[in-house]
Image 1: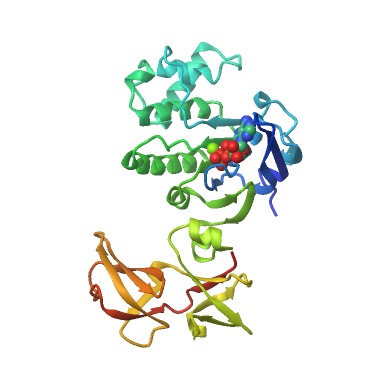
Image 2: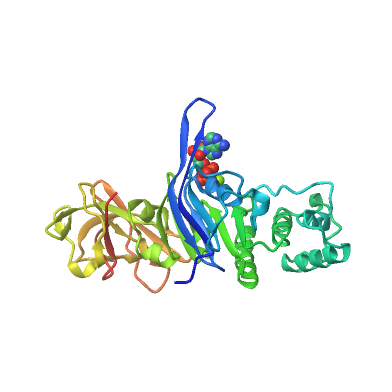
Length: 355
Ligand code: ADP
Ligand code: MG
């Protein structure tokens, strides 16, 4: 085993609130991050993502636990002594300074010659695709360009780890998609380890080598995007990552049934039964549902047929439940609204999860 670059060991952090209460933002978080990895911390608002980033950066100190870089503890060091830089969502640029001055500011603590600073600023401007913009003021740049300057200011220091806290969330969707691709390329080109925070599961899936899903101060699953999507560890992850149909089910002696209908073994995924308790659910991705006239597992009625361009979304009601099947928008027959259909699943796709 190669040694991880960054080790987060059992880190906990509780804040005192102004109201006199307390919030446990991190509950014994452990995470190993490899050199050169693009790791994404994903979770709903308030689950502790920013707190973990700030703890790695040295802007907060853990109540307990350790943080190691290259095997040596850094959690007791001040922020400036850690080879780690942060890019925040708010760009936090100095409005009265030029782009070049903003970027060079990151080097201020280091005593470097004017020539070397100028050269490194130039290299950074190339990296962030802002060559020729060095003399502009932040107010003369678009939002996306300002975010790149913030990125350049962090990159110029050559950090071992770059922490990014929802850096793209202020951008509109199209610009954001473009920046996602660019950031990913930049990370691959520089080989710097990125720890990237987002609450957007699509962004996490498209950027991360691995994703750590957080819920209420804990890591609930750490996996590659593919594994996470195909093999969610529990109901929370299945629901949070992508779209999933969740259906109450019963399990007796390893046999899974829905509304008294036995789910054929071949429809179940390998090691399908991950969680078994009083409130287990089956999880089926919309693209894994098959709509037939007969031989399905469940009978239902087509409620809506929605054309989205690349796909057709078919909503089917089964008693009081509703499921969504996603079909390709051409080349397959699409059922009409109001008709009775049977629903099956592609072989090996159904999972059983505990809540
Ligand atoms: P996220 O970045 O995932 O949205 P945060 O790490 O910012 O979550 O916050 C985790 C929890 O800690 C939230 O309940 C938040 O309200 C609380 N919290 C964050 N910072 C402070 C603080 N300085 N004082 C008190 N509570 C805080
Ligand atoms: Mg946050």
